[in-house]
Image (tube, rainbow, N blue to C red; front, top):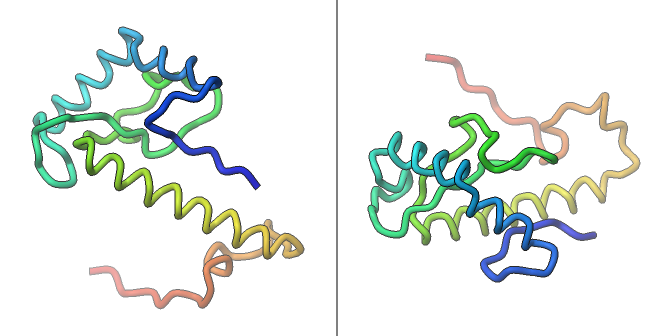
Amino acid sequence: MAIATKTTTEQPGQTWYSSKLRDARWQKKAAEIKALAGWKCEECSGMQDLTVHHCYYIRGRDPWEYDNGLLICLCWECHRERQMFEDALMLGIALHLRQRATCDIKNTPAWAFFGEKPELLPLE
């Protein structure tokens, strides 16, 4: 099973995405997200090597076509760590779903895919 991940080295099929990140529309959107974050990493408050992270991707959508709420300003190190965590999480979910391939997904509560039913805490 292949899980798509972003890498720091450009693969032959990734040239199109790298070129989109050089597009003026993405550069403008990325600058807007960084400005909204006060030109600081939203994880560690660092101000060096800032990037913009897509919280998730929507097939067929260009990088600059996302709502601001789906983008986060991160320094390069926090971006790398977050991407590794998200990739591992997605792989874990994919493997878990593969193991449960015979279950009725439409009629199974979401928590069932992750083990025991979570305890709900009262709203304050």
